[in-house]
Image (cartoon, rainbow, N blue to C red; front, side, top):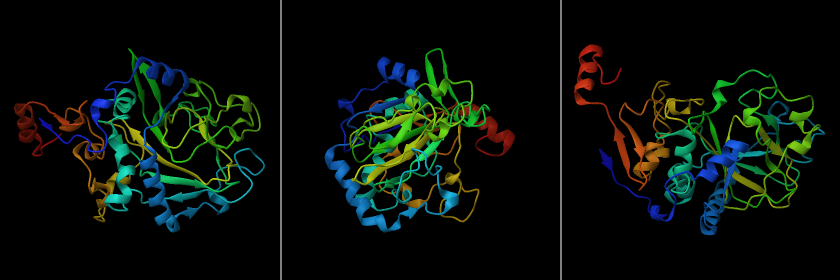
Length: 331
């Protein structure tokens, strides 16, 4: 069963339909990959206009308990705290359109499939990170083996078996301003998704071994995909241009880290719906990414190469048997 609703703003035929061998190799090597020019300059401008209109809602991380780096470290910065701006899916059709397009952007879908598998899902509520000059970054964190404790972290696990890459939690950083060398912002330790040990003293704060911590240079419109199993953070922001990037996290069909999808607007903590405005003006592919975690074979919508959606199903006889046994549609 398939539902057609091909992306209106980007012709699917103009994009690759599979993750390339080069992309797979580079992601497996480094634990992250930069996808260039995902958003057009016009789309980036639309994001800025929406942020400007809603910037009064940004919440500063000024309380000492919310600071993400130790004073005096390269991650701390020298001025104001980071600003977090939520609500980017709830600003209406015009202002949220580009932000929602990331859910099933035709340039990104092949990479989401290659890194997460069919039926991938949104796991965290996305938001915009903002830093004024001198603004605080974030000490290094994450790791399939936690970079601080050295314990195995199944929530962030990265694996590769028989040529299939899987990341239990995938970060997706949509860059809305240029991040030039030395500007600060997102930083990462390439290859650390395969590390078997915790970091040596001082490294999580950038005070030791900082030659192994890189700040990728990116342009507005680029997207950085990274396994949360790759140790990452953010350097203090040095540019006079306000740092802006939208952060999303995605997961495989059966995996969940966050729990915001439980509540929606019903007041029932067990209601598996995102906030209702998330669903406004979505096409069927974008809506498929908002499904809660469950296996593909249980009627999960999967995005096809042409942007349409296919419902993966078991036989009607098996479904009827489950209903006879369990008195409900799904086991």
